[in-house]
Length: 206
Length: 268
Image (tube, one colour):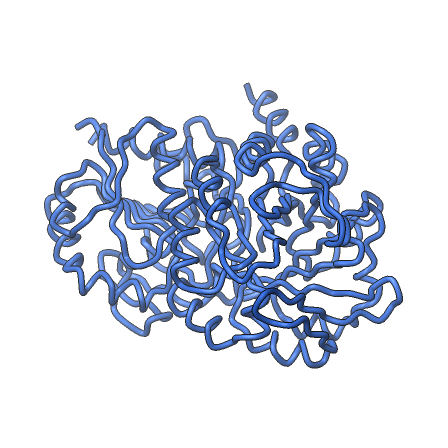
């Protein structure tokens, strides 16, 4: 399969402009879906970040997007969740005190660090990144932009990459053709663009 | 802990970029879209756009410029943001976070509503200090067409800020903004005040080269913001980063672009 079209699933928030810019810069036709029925009609579905878990879950439920997402997952079509989008794939979201989609058997819980947030740039566990085949064109010096108050717990998970300085916080998970990233590749400058290209390449090869 | 950031501030007035001095004098400095693209090409850690037009509404000329610029550097926007529609418009244009000042102090209910819709991490609280040069700063909220200016003691401001849900605070030495090397805030804000904020701090307002390292070494510092200095000379940003960045010191700064390029070249 060769990816050509990218669809963004809205959830009431989302830094949609940044995501559109990032994929268009890579040469992909990118649009915001007008209804959940369109979720099957794009090559890659992106669930964006920037939002509140409770508000996003409510919005997705009202739009019938849960069913659309489940259908897409069962058909093994590519899905990318960014930040909040990735957190929605977990089994529980503390911010909303609510169940998520349950694709990833772990919880999204409040960060424990002193400043209560991750705002800024982090190095990733580069060895793990290479192990997932996503490090081509990247180096251990590269950093990625995070902006979150809640984290996906890494306990017992495989096929993940954590933040280099915090092995309890998942930065990337891959489950078949579903990928979730806690950071914002659309705003991680060159490193983010290279990562997206690697990820799309991985989807293309499948 | 995240790496510390050097943030570029672009001050905008009535739809145009300006070099601002103490928020009292301005010199035109070109268009917003081109300024954003330049900063993006220098790979600055973040861009903060501050609209200082003193209008109680979002200026959609700025929104259009952000949309046109299409940058891959994180953008934080402040100035005139009042409603959910404002935040949505900015996110759809290419912004990632929002600075709140007037709402933060004057309308905590709306601040809460915005955070409950878009998440606390999407908002940065701005604290404009005046009087740092005299050693006794206050918080001064400038007025606009709808509201008068208010002066507030640090104690009063802290009571509001401690319970606000925003993710970081932007501390502005407003008197010295634009006057490189004149930054005076860090010497006159009590440590207890800073600790009570319990969030990452972004310092701004005339920070000079000799002040940067000591500010970055403060544990609570998340970022330093530079404004006019980055509009004055090309590639100044890379020079600033490389002057400060040293892998073994305590600043924990994100590696500069030239350091990253050099590392990658070494590996090849």
